Image 1 (cartoon, rainbow, N blue to C red):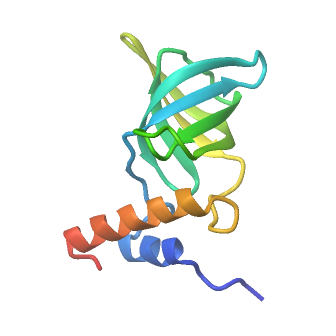
Image 2: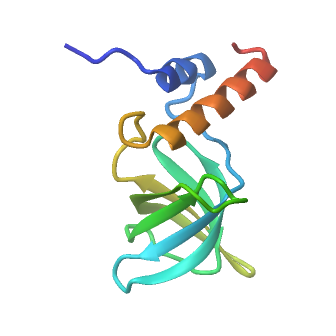
Image 3: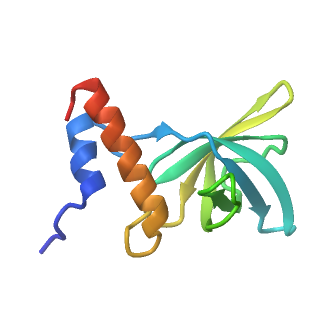
Length: 132
């Protein structure tokens, strides 16, 4: 027996994408789990499956990292840590852009605030585009 679809899965079907990516301009911290060094990064987009970001540090495909996502940039409260693997990376002139696949999908039970934020942004984008 399969689980019933959650809200994001329903919205994703409407938009015809496996895991809808949404703009995600947030401050991130990337922890290199091999060296325990921390690097600042800036979010580009996010889905329940992963995050795209820009950083001064290039991580190679297959490298495991832990991402700290700051949900509230002003108060710097409620950071969320999520592990993931670099799926692609591209060297840029003054840094790199990368795509990280999370170790597990973001679900409301494990990361309610992050899931809720993604869900709200998806609703706004889909309503604005006339798909919902």
